[in-house]
Image 1 (cartoon, rainbow, N blue to C red):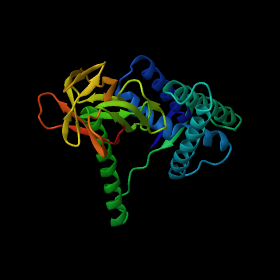
Image 2 (cartoon, one colour):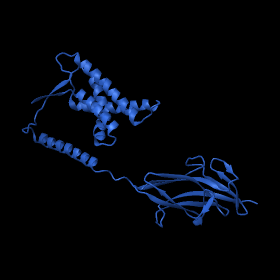
Image 3 (cartoon, helix red, strand yellow):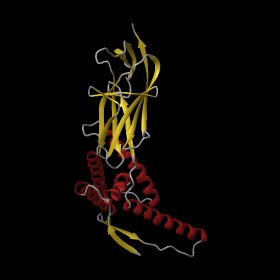
Image 4 (cartoon, helix red, strand yellow):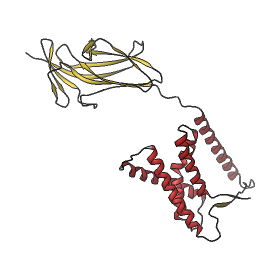
Amino acid sequence: MKLKILNVILIVDILSLLLILSILFIPSTIARVILGLPFLLFFPGFTLISALFAKKDRMDNIELLALSGAMSIAIVALIGFGLNYSSWGIRLEPVLYSVWTFIFITSAIALIRRAHRSKIHIFVNEITLVLPRWEDSLFNKIFSIILITAIFSALGVLAIKLAVPAIEEQFTEFYILGITGKAQDYPIEYDIKDGQITQVVYGDGTTNSISGLGIVNLGIVNHQQKTVGYFVKMTIDDKPAVINFGGTNMDILGPIDLKTNEKWENAIGIAPQRAGDNQKVKILLFRGAEVTPENSLQLLINVNQTE
């Protein structure tokens, strides 16, 4: 049975345009997923191959599919590489418009080249549908059934995945940064005299003999998918220690109420009270009314007694 359908190249152009419209006017939709995958993994390679081999005999569908996929990955990677060194960067809009421009240009070239071929309609394709011949061997029958089952199973899994919203992982980010705002350059050595800190040395060699505190930046990010109140405690060698926050010493820092995906980051001061090497500073994070810490961070400091 023969059917006439719109040229596949034009179908690709139309689907690409629909993807752009869905992203611009419907920010969250299943169409973005359904159209986005072939837009990146099939369309660029297909239009490029159509432009390059427009005047040659049509290749096998399996070969066309494989080549289109491989070429698309390479093309999108090269486009991303170019955007990375441009002022636009690798963001949704630049990638979307760059890939669409490539698809549009190569599809136009393919249609123009095909128009020069004799007796061919550039806007319509004629396809022949052949029903499976069940008089073939048992192996071919089994293979056809397995292939059809696999295709419908994959479509079913995709439909369920799109219909059922994913349950986001629930966790809390808890971190400390040094005085440079990086995961380094923490206070490592203190000088103490008559119970008072006279100097603090940091990992980058910086010294501080004014504040009388070792400063770190403490950060909490709530990914629990609900508003949570956090509390922070500190111990030195497993003994309770005060936290200096905003110039005030406190046994418990909090509550720190954070909404979903909200971040809290502030400087806190660490002030050991006795001399000793390799003192273990633990910063403990508690969630709500829980008595067991959800997370903890650890530093080692040396405290020198000076005369």
